[in-house]
Length: 448
Image 1 (cartoon, rainbow, N blue to C red):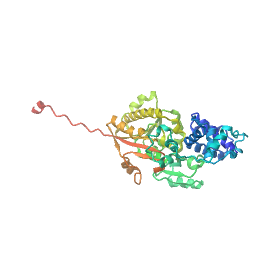
Image 2: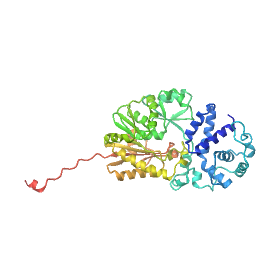
Image 3: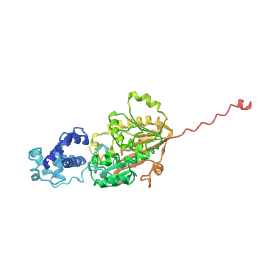
């Protein structure tokens, strides 16, 4: 593809995302319908698309300053503004690529030429930009994220690394690392997870034997730590209540060494179906999948008080994954977070009934918002005096090596401090009921 054709592809993808599509799904559909686009072109187009998404607020601010219009800018205007602000293009530089040729953008209009002239010599960041613009997050979150440091916000808007979880049912971390090295891929052990490998670049893992043979799975180090801190053990009865496509389910099964019973539940049967191939590839055979719906209410009631571990990877705003999904932040609003809070409370209440005395309920989100994390746990504890918090440092000492990287009772991971996605986890133990002391006999009985 010519450079101009790549730019046109980025424009079309930006418009797809603006219509409400997720960037990864839009890209997949776009490239699948254009098989003629080679791997290098796909990589270049994707890189530009995500760079544009990471600069959405700043580009929009500059376009508004230059045009006086507060209307959301189309993909073409954002690409033109980025070329002017980031790449330093002037009007003459657009000619070769914006010429209306095959698959290339049309020539600049008079308004677009004025936009380029208005942005000439400016930088993407500018002191007068509001904090939410500089931080690249929705304006409604400005008060909530005011306490987040600038390094954290920058890390949250930077590209995420590629992490792998080594499957101990199939290979050791050293074996997996050797397999990657033989394939010409550079990787290194992660800092905290004993099963993690951080890969350099974005190699096509699906074609590698280490992946096809189930030695590794793609999983952020933070997600690996959440699964490890569930402390699922061989022979236990464990439930992954919001299993999705099975990333944490796989990690739990490995911790259980394929021994015991692990039930993976989700409200989406399609998501559970996507886990089948992954489970088979990993050699996992102690997992039962169960889609939840109205017809499973009775079954859930019968499970009350049975489980040693219940992991709730709760539906949330996903603010901790913005570096992987920079478009996600613009698809949520205050009403969505409020609705999710009701869902989180409901899921926690339902999950609490499944935990046996002495068992544990692990509540996790990929959110950075206190309302979805600490505040949700505190509200749960007010409703459920039968649970107590197990400080994460104590559980960390039991299942992981090295010092716990967080202070306080909960796990809170962030991109800048821990180089993981943003994750939160609380480990809640159901208190073993103490038998009530026998009542004293009535006085007349004592006298007798």
